[in-house]
Image (cartoon, rainbow, N blue to C red; front, top):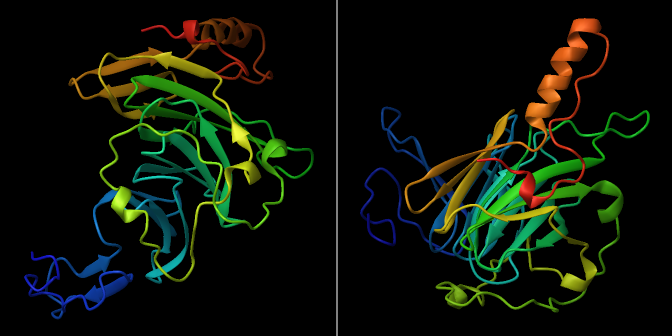
Length: 290
């Protein structure tokens, strides 16, 4: 397919490369049935919200975009502090989106506020994978049943696995509307710096000033491979990390074996007690067992 879409006979030519557009196949018997033109440059990652309502994309131009999938509408989005965004992930309740990329940061986007509500600094190179820990049991606020804390992980080209806590009480602060600034030092080598000057018009927001957004620090920072990492997955018992060397490493959750043993003993005497959490509230890098 040519860059302007002229080589795709199923769909009309894209008239404006800078704008989001949706085209449906000219024939009802065609497959694919639709084409979404998201942005100029590559799309590096996509992720659906758990209920399938929203689709998030991140790309070379540094923007997170969130779409109402069934309505085929762009509803919100925002810019990285620098360079491309490489990965994204939803929280299980669909309230938050993680992004990571060439600015070495992890950003937390709120769907309710439709803005960045926190950023995490801890990687020394591009962030290549992010994921919420959906198996971790979060405490809830009194009477509301709402999550008051989320746990998530990130991996990067610095070979590190980072674990984070997102505590609601620490990020509920008003953001002042002021021009972007206060940028940290980024790793060199971004191939997308020329995209930074392109700001799609409409509802996509520029990066807020870093001094106006709460900063997160990782609970765990652990070098888990010798080569750059490309992704991570949480399971009930483990954390899986993947690297460019062709390896998948499986890490037992800190305290999981102990909690399972204790829980088995407890179950012999009573079945009314709650299962202990899979991860302690604070863990050290030495807790991981390969």
